[in-house]
Image (tube, rainbow, N blue to C red):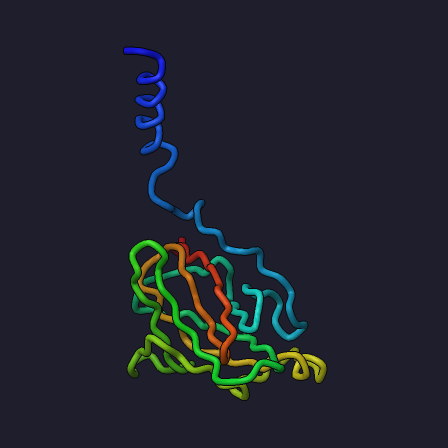
Length: 165
């Protein structure tokens, strides 16, 4: 066996150990940032941002919803729609209105720009953002891509969902 063949063999043997399927450590979730004083931290780069009680999101089971809070750029025009999917399996996030645990779970959710007024919001927050909140039903832990479509603008939000301990 020549040295070139040996090098290729070593690389092929090491890939399954070090370059296996994407796991929690491979989820490129951005660092939550303070976007508005009304919401302590959020993910995204606009025109739609998202936050939850904890980031990464703590998942209990597929039957337990996660409350999501959405921020929308007040200057963007058009309907704001969100969808979400697991980055590996393609399993889709479902959405319902806040408090609805038995209703129809939607794959696409239209955000209501007048849907929520955070208690810590100041008048200047409402000049920059509108807010909404709903339930997100995540089918399993993993890395999710949430797409916020606002008129012709689009926002991709990567969020890690981890099993609660």
